[in-house]
Image (cartoon, rainbow, N blue to C red; front, side, top):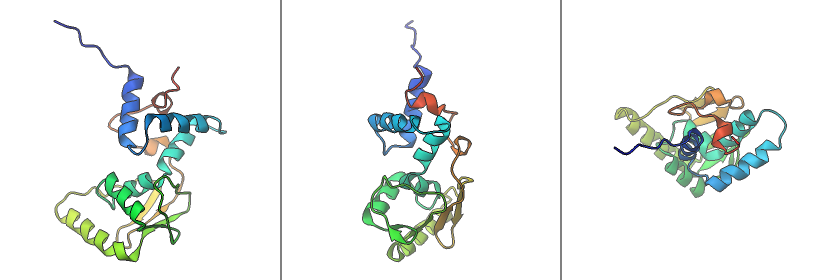
Length: 167
């Protein structure tokens, strides 16, 4: 019988992180990690802030939209607002204290989609601790900066290993 080779841990960790943040390519992860490595402070914390502070991931974490591809469509269409100004680029960042909302034209459609998902029990309304989400007003507010303990993965992932700096 042929022996099955195990994948190295760092390869699996990188693939898990890559699948969770699918708007990034491997090269973008490495470039981001190199830039974050030069900052002061703990690498894992700064890298977590850089990943979770992106517009698409913050919008997806609110639970107001069904999947990450819908988040990309909402931002590209210009229906997403940060501090009452339209943001049209998916790689924009959400800072501490920013108010996230939706344009009036899209708010009703989003409200009915959310109601439909709730009636079908196809929604998970479990925002992370660093976000305040108002499901009645369809607004979100970043209360504090995200930490690595706030991330929810299928297994624990070492951010330092996932970025390729395990050597």
